[in-house]
Amino acid sequence: QVQLVESGGGFVQPGGSLRLSCVASGIVFSANAMGWHRQAPGKQRELVAVITNNGRTTYAESARGRFTISRDNAKNTVYLQMNSLKPEDTAVYYCGARRGVMYDYWGQGTQVIVSS
Image (cartoon, rainbow, N blue to C red; front, side, top):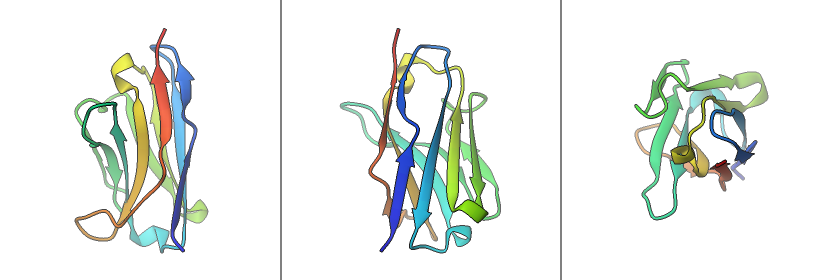
């Protein structure tokens, strides 16, 4: 059974930092590209960052320069370090895994709230 379990969300003030983690099981983690997406209330889910199985990274414009995606294949874990957080970063953040173009699996999400 495939599971992607996110953690690390919470409440933070503008300018603060959070580190999200996603632990995968039931998949060949090293063979998957792993992505972080987010969905704010009333909005569509959007890409935040992706890291391929080869370690190549891609960021949404809104995340570039503030967020860093990384992976530890030995721990079957992908991370999203988020710095200089803004209120508009408030969303539920989802971890996804894919072998091809489309995502095969999603986690349940972790809530991030950025507010003063």
